Image (cartoon, rainbow, N blue to C red):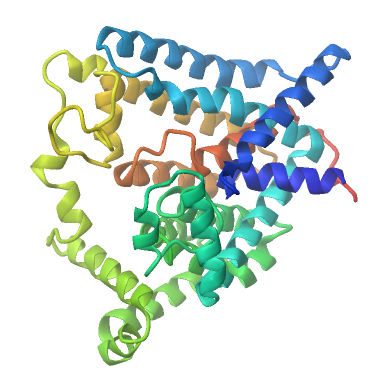
Length: 406
């Protein structure tokens, strides 16, 4: 029973799937807050110094800073929503996950299982349109825009609250977490096609994140045959895509998702040849990179351009631009300092001290913050916070290697 609760908590807080108009992560947060309250009143210590000083206090201080900026600029208090979600939904749930998992190894195991489940759900919904439409209907019931229906013709596969941005990224991150683990390396390699497939059918960003992972893995583990295998498979795939047009064109006429992925891969290749087309043309457009005026660049204006209709200017989903509009360069620098410090501390606390995975996470965050604002309440941040709290909650150097039994 504990294991089932652990799986539900982990899957729900990472992917935030909706069911009958309600996001399951909200129920998990309520359960976690009650659980921690009961633990506290019975004399158990549920928050240690590492969690408080490395995560809770920095996020709380950023929250206070943004509250001042928002108040000064007469912006909506709802712009604090993502930070409040991290404090009152994500962190409590992540602590409960660590308590139930009993060890950091147990947390890695349940994260990996959650990623496998999402991978198969994405694959099943790709091959069975009725299942995809059920998941789409749940998103609509939860209040998401009708645009999800429009996108379902070539993407939106799986059961998650954000299928077009953070979920595809976290699928690749979980894959490389498994590849970094001695226990799950072989299984991860075996399941890598379904992980990659579940990512790129929803967002072509997954292709670049995969390449970042391959590069980091190959540089650090240059003697490992797995790195060579990944590189060879990648080169072979790129060869078929770029130099066998008859093969790809035959797929174009069959499936719009393949066509969409192929177009994205061409955009990436053309970008390296100096041609800014598609999304790369979008992110380099002067209209999409407008910054606030004067001192607002330093302190921000307490709002974001994404989805904002009150500023009478073009919106943008570029994360760095949105971060500067929200809290200025001060906010952007602070969140990067928090991320870097936590990655370094996580690396030092990790028993295996896996440099490859630490570098992979760092470079991935730098890249994906172009596609959207990644430093928010989403699958990627939720996954990383769960992983970090498991390291802060336990002492991996001395803890038992026992995984939670049924």
